[in-house]
Length: 372
Image 1: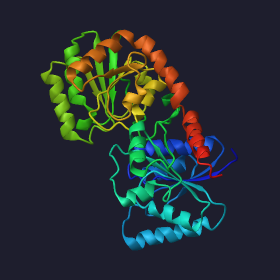
Image 2: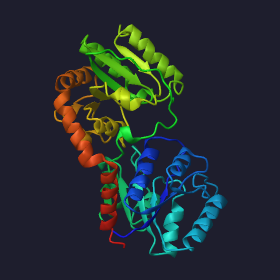
Image 3: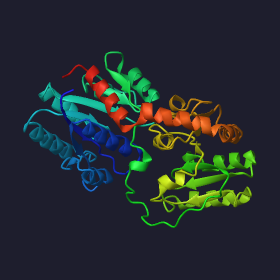
Image 4: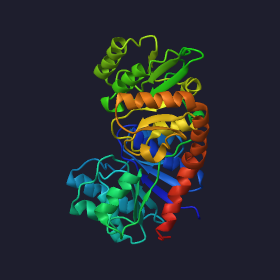
């Protein structure tokens, strides 16, 4: 495929899984030899990281501002930009303000618009969404998981091109430390024990409480649970509840809670099993890809995209029900099988979730649109 100009509209306000997904696609397309411009909110984490990565950044569009005159101003700025040279391929990751790209397609029939949806919620069934996601509003739609793609197909019918693009990322070892603590004291984990790790925020939906209950049911003194928390101050009440749960279950000596670390790669070298006990969401499954990149198998509930990624009994364990008992059984199975399962998890990462594969699969979908 000849070098192509891509505009990636990533107007997310926070550095969340959706932002990671979009940012990694920008990196993948750049590595594949294409020119990428990131359309982002001014001073947003996405804009800052894109600039640090050497990507072109355009922050003149205020896509999240729903005032009609602001949106009209966005369209005029976009129209002026598109008039300057060859038309780019626009990839839009959020619905906010994205109608201007569909409108621009009316003025420039050669403008290609691909929508990417990564929200765990089913899109509302209304005329506006049918237009936005249908062939009148864009050239094709990618879902971050098969369930999302199915929702889009139900919404727009068979005439629209709809595909699935699972999250991809560079291996954890190759990433810069970013905003994490740059000089942490070494984290001492018990030697000779099976270490399970839950990596993520302390929101209730992430399942820390049920994970602790399952770990107590496991009742394995040669096991240790590591709770790696993105930000210890983000949800103080939830964190306090987690600490109280640890004490009430008598697990103080078997559970370690720690915040952001710059030596995450080194810490995860001591982890044998990843745990994703989320009670909902998990569309992009960023944490699973991070575990797999280090050949760490995963125990998870069957929510979001996880059933498509976890092959139970091969690269991890997918619990049949959302319960502490089912999770405890998964922890037991993984504790016995992690060497073999870890090899399969690593092989899956290399075959399916590397950054190069992520970019190539997007370009394959783009080629199927038959637009250029």
